[in-house]
Amino acid sequence: MMFKLKLKIKFLFYHLLGFLTVGIILCIAYLFDKLFETLTVMLLFYIYRSMFTKQWHSKSLYLCSFISIIVFSLLIQLELKFSASIIFSIILTFMMTFISYNIRDYLDNKIIIKNYENRLINIPNKCIENLSEDEMVKLLPDVREDIIHIVYGYLHREGVTSIGYAMGCGISEATLFRYVKQVKSKYESLGQ
Image: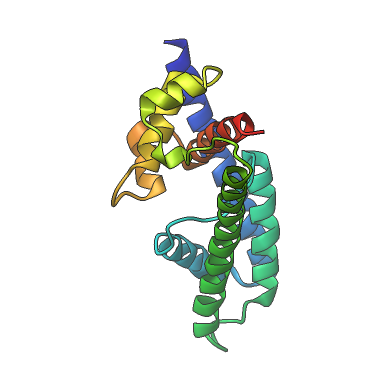
């Protein structure tokens, strides 16, 4: 009962912080007289985000909000007025999501290379995606089983976006990525 209440409070806090972040970004856009351009960029950001399988995410919700405000502040300054070009907003937003995807892909590839190097020096290291849920529970006793269940389901989902999967589990996408990072970090620390 207490765990569900805690999840609901975190979920509410997540949304309140999200609304506050969007509000600050829109205030900045209003000050630069680019409100409609910024609203277009925000809408396109969510559309483009679904085109890529992954995006870079910060380690905490506070840092995510701070970085979002900084990135959108820079985009607001780069944006052209609609009267000059609406295409520029479309391209600018695509570039932002493309860069975010490539940062996440680079970080994921570093992990894959590290795992490969660990195998070369005879450290037994099975890729976490190839573990069964029971193996994950046995290897990671410090991690709660409900978190392992969520992460295992996320790693083996098919045709569902991360947002859709998180909503299906009753958690925010940020919480989902925090759980994935927690499980992967604990598992990676076993090979050291």
